[in-house]
Image 1 (tube, rainbow, N blue to C red):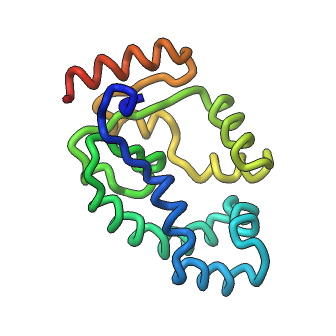
Image 2 (cartoon, helix red, strand yellow; image 1 turned 90 degrees about the vertical axis):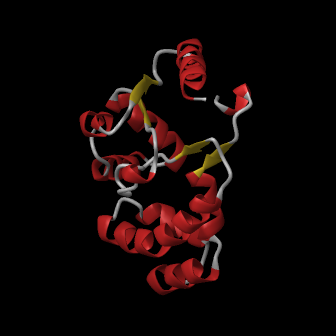
Length: 158
């Protein structure tokens, strides 16, 4: 939504998608998972905390290098707190909604409830995440509400 206001927005998820295709990541995944559709195989293992930690150990440094080089006003980093990157940013906007809504969204994205539950269990809770935010926005209150808050913050911050 910041982009709709003319701000340059970058996405850590988009960068992660690019990094996923790099040789070092693909080699790690082949060693861990064997041959096949590595994206699908990895998705099925995201609920495995140890696998996810090892994969993050390979991917996060590469992602961070690319994020630092982006020329943007706003950077979307969904797991900022979990990645330990809060101090790298001047301001943090935490987006939150009830756990059942988060679970529903994760399940829709991942395709499996069990994987979504395990992944959700590996993330810090809403109460913890909000402590790190300069502002908190509720994403379950409707798009008009979210747009109003985003517009207000854009005017204050930029």
